[in-house]
Image 1 (tube, rainbow, N blue to C red):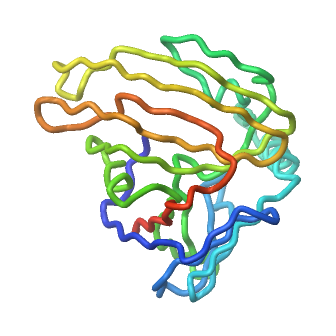
Image 2: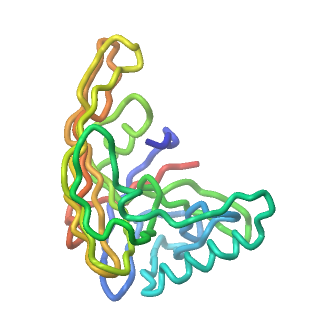
Length: 241
């Protein structure tokens, strides 16, 4: 799990949507000015959408998402001179684990989406300024907990695109040591993914945590599942840079 900045303030969306091929929302009390929603890519940040000085945000969900990503990979490989080649992850590569048995259908197909580890970047490309990160998730407490080792129950959402239907079902478990190398617990991950052709919302959820003798907490049971719509209780959580 990626470490996120500790300074966090929470803004509840006054409106949000997953319709007409876009993620839309308004972040109340935004005062940082206009900018772009981005993710890290094979070079400068890749711009996905925009927000204005009132915090009105829109991220288009392009129907040719994979066509663009494949082109980016090809261009990166054409300029490579050290023998390394970029490639797209497949459905089976992205959602896999050891210590269990998964049933995967159409797992060999490429998959791409955003954001990585649940966090978009908020930037102003013209000013070369980064405001911080934005998570679409369940609560401030959950976002605060994404700093090792303070994990708490909750979830974040990501959006993924596939060209054909596919699924990943099953459960994986493995014995894990706490950071003190003394406490031992069983980490379980459950997959319940039914992806349709096109865009899909994937919910990553920490359902149970394990707390060691020093008070450090770890995901003990987590899950990946597809959902049909953004939950009503979802929040946009800004993590200041």
